[in-house]
Length: 341
Image (cartoon, rainbow, N blue to C red; front, side):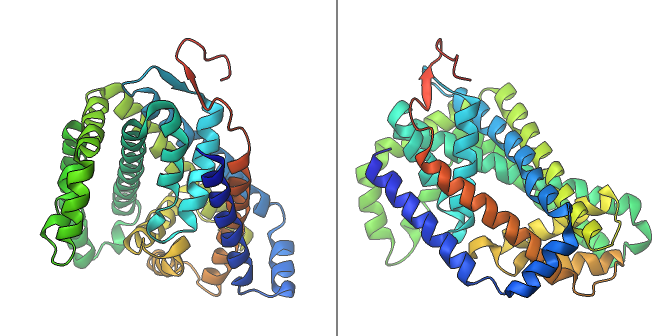
C-alpha cells in the first residue's frame, strides 16, 4: 500500500478513536467504579481476544496462501492484517473499512483481483462461522432449555433451519462459481443506479470476472475451505468466554453453554443491524432479550456489559490502528522463503 493511503487509514483510525472517547456515556467516576468492580475480569475480557484474533489470523492465512500465486503470507503479518482490518470494520458503517484496507495491503504483492478474492472469501467464511455458531446455539437451547421451548420458538427453530440450508447452498455456490459479478448484476436492475453501474461494469468487467475465477479456484480446495471454517468457528466459541467473564464480574455465575447462547443471540442482533458503526445498541438489545429468556436477573446488566465490550473494542481499535504503521516490509514473501514466520 502506498504510504499516503496508509497514512489516510491511520488518520481515519485516530479520528474514530477520538469519536469513541467523546461519545463514551459513562463519566469518570462511573468508569473508575466499574473498573474497580471488575478486578481481573477486565484484563481477561481484553486478553481473550488475543486468542480470538489468533484463530481469525489462521483462517485468513489459509485462504490467502491457497490462492493461485507464488507468494506466502506469514502468520505474523496475517495477525497484523487481521487486527487492523477488524479495527477499521468496527469503526465504519456496514463494517466496510476492514476489507479495503486488507486488499490494499495485499494487492502490492499478488495484484488487486487476487487480493479482492481472498478478502471476499474470508468475509464469506467469517459470516458462515456465525451461522455455525447460531446453529450450535439453537441446538444448545433445545437440549438444555427444553422447558422454555414454546410453540413460537419451535416455529422459529424450523424457520432458522430453512434459512441455514439456503445460506449453506449460497455459500457453497459462491465458493465454486464466484459471486462478485452475480451480486453486482443486481445494481444493473435498480433505477437511477443501473446506468452508472453499467458504465463501471463495462470498465471493470475483466477484473471482476478475474476475482470470480480466483474465488472459484479457492473453492475447489476443500482442505482450505474446511480448515479456515474450523479456525473461524473456534474463534467464535472462544469469543463466548468474554460474556462468561463479564457476567462473573457482575456476580452472575453462568455456564459456558449460557455464554454460547448469549454471544450467539447478541451476535445475531448485531449482524441484523450491521449498518450501525460498532453495532451501537443492537448487541445490548439482543443481550437484554436473551438474558430475559434465560431467566437471569437483568438489573443494570445491559449497561454493565456494554461498558466492558466498549472498553475492549476501544483497546483493540487502538492496537489495530497503531499496527497500520508497523511491520509493513515484506508482508508477503516467495513461497520458498518463509523463514519470517
